[in-house]
Image 1 (tube, rainbow, N blue to C red):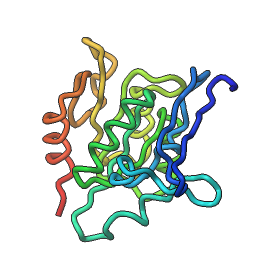
Image 2 (cartoon, rainbow, N blue to C red; image 1 turned 180 degrees about the vertical axis):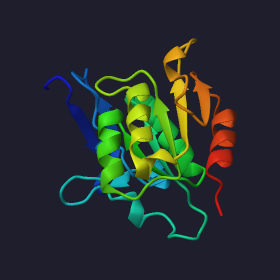
Image 3 (spheres, rainbow, N blue to C red; image 1 turned 120 degrees about the horizontal axis):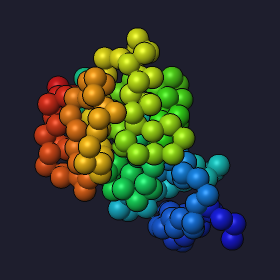
Length: 186
């Protein structure tokens, strides 16, 4: 098996039951997890004929039904999967990105989220650089952004107007309270 490969196990009905990451050379693209409906994370996700997950847009209530879109930018595949599942179980529509560069591509291609959760330490484009670019982009500037970090000192974040800073390991109650404050659902 090549480095960075993912293996998949399926049950007899074609549902994905397990994905295993094998020593990645670079961040794992979040499209493997991206936009999987929360119930499917426990029950298995039916894959399309092309092997891709269905888009979350087809699995969440439409506008006006109280669903807030959240973008989660986290390079750690396991943490990204757990946080995405938690947020979806709490009723958020979640889009994931493995680093700041992937997040910017997704933000340009899709509807803007109500809030962004961004890890600070990531390869390629880290959370500080992402936030600087976000603040320079008029259509992204107003989106509340919450920093997730294990760093004790964030001098680089001064002046970047993060809505909140959440220390890792993430306190789930603090995360959910912060999201409720920065992107209240109707």
